[in-house]
Amino acid sequence: MITKTQPTTQSIIDLLINYNGHSFVGLTTLTDARAKKTNNPFGKILKKTRLLANIGFHYANSLDSQAKREGKEIDFDIKPRRWGVRMPNTPLVKHNDKYYLEYKAENVQSVEYFTEEGEQIEKSQIEEFLPQTRHSSTQNDLDKKIILRDVAIENIISLRISKKVYLG
Image (cartoon, rainbow, N blue to C red; front, side, top):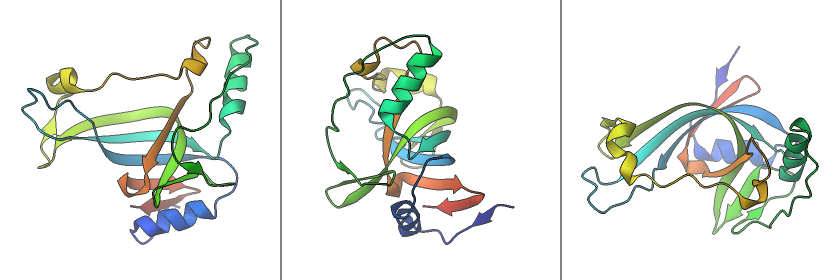
């Protein structure tokens, strides 16, 4: 049985501050697509993503496991975070008094784009304005990349974990 909690960003922060371990979660986010502004007739573009994610994982362990699956021995040079501080024993990152969820994307189920007014836009209409996907140079020797992301807690629409749904 899946239950829904009170819809607040604070409920997600409270859950994650006290969360220890790792788990797969269902995640729906609404973020700025960071579209180019030059000649962009749509203005600000929002991106709604539904995905399966892994939280509370260790990046180094994920890299080592993927290398083993690919039959490779790689000595990874893992760089420290460029911004924010990972809160010990949680999947949270704190930066400038804001909280972010650090996750490993496992399976992106859907991506939709919208104008600020809520009108849906086909990706083919905006592809030229979207930023290029970047991959970590640490993973150049891997065939399958480990996709590490951070999302601001206020950009989480829903988080499903342990048969409970938390609404942002």
